[in-house]
Length: 121
Image (tube, rainbow, N blue to C red; front, side):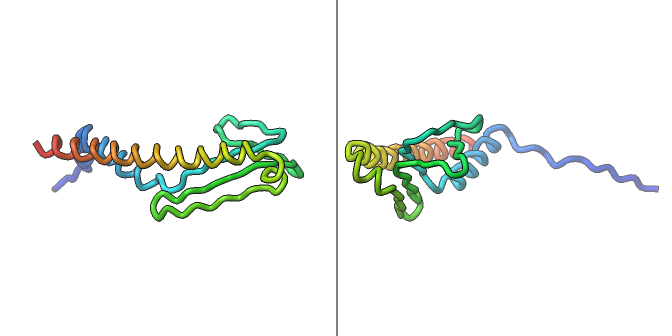
């Protein structure tokens, strides 16, 4: 009579698990969303803006695809016509956001490469 036991596969070491999390996190970072909005807004417990039905909102929303660099911007006419300083503010945030993401990607790549090398030792 033979018995078989189900033994779990050996777990990866902590460094391998951390490297996997970095890889998965980088894969999930695709779009940078910048919002400059005016209106009766509330921030939900998840940190996102909670919009109400039939609510009037003025502002700009930009979505920057970090892979191909495509930028899509939506702006209300009222916001564009009446708040030029806020339009400039939003545009500045787009540029800063792109620079921050580029810098973060370089740092993450260096960390990943260093940890990968350490893991080989």
